[in-house]
Image 1: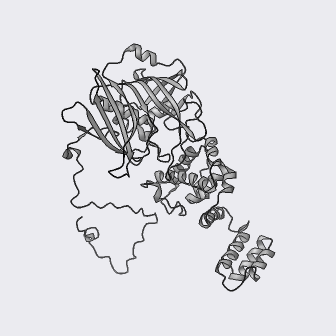
Image 2: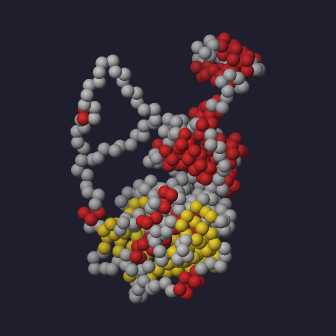
Image 3: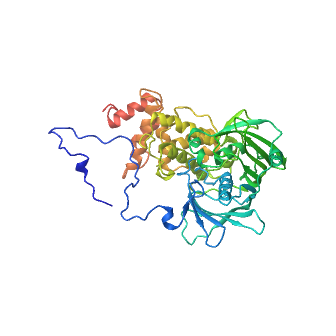
Length: 484
């Protein structure tokens, strides 16, 4: 909002005959960073709100004449990278963390029970309310949500409700939640571990503990932990835990979490999983239920997602373009996260990864994340062999579901992307290059022809060319030597 004087940055006139500096070769990301003049203060206290310093609660609004507390916040994968932006689903574990932390504001540290409805989509506006009940030392908690892009008149949807208590947990309750089966360790990746102190128990750690505990879901559904009972958090900020999980009924487990010194971190009397229909938007890719082997020796948060068999099944029930778009959404979302783009919309399908800003180091990270997302071991040269999002999409379709890839009706530009990726693998001094070059030039000639009917002399010569040398000779005759 203020005038800009670039002579401050470049105060000196360059000497005569000084070469003009070239622009950098990396891709420009068209994002606006200028401050707006007269912008209202972002300090929540100015508007009568009290910051909670919790990533999911945002700010608190004490209600006049009532013990109730109201919290409001906006949550998006951009601000919370541990949320799976490609699925578009707000994790159930984050709702549990929100309810527990909201209860702390009123001294209710025991989450007696929390029932979840189908999860909201991110980015999302959250409103969390904790209010007293007729029973002493007991509070009701509700969490409502609506899409962040919705207007002020958009309705709020109840996505979780339950009760909190200020009664202290007992050793008997903790023992009851302890599992009798084998234990395993779970730890946060480095990025999430840096933020662990801001949470009671990081939702990504909860997700890793629960991964693979639900029975296999029906096609078109995903298992969600929708009913939580007796959740007690006794130590905050854990970066790694030892988990004991045991069956507590039909599709229900109990949980006991301890730290490296065997100190109690959290206990859960029961978590019950239900199958809910998959929720998918145009910006989201299929969400895979947990399918990791039971009781591995060590697991990391987020590991084991995206097994190829379920993804192949989901592609099988889609039509051709839906299959292509579903995989393309995954590629674009992962690439945007690796390259630091604000959202997947900035990833142009036909633009090369190099132009989008990919380096040799980020190429490896992109390969690793894509492999996790689709459940496949991918080569380190993936994005060099297939240099655009559309080209990678075509390649992944052939690996995950060959029938789906062959049936997907691609646009002419998408077909050209696939061809460009294949040409990158063609040797410059032989192979199929002459035949491909001849075919391409013949096709271009047909596109540009006006008066001459199809099947002219050039096309006849092309059809007669059966070897690579013949086709290169045809090209040289028509357009001159390739070296020119």
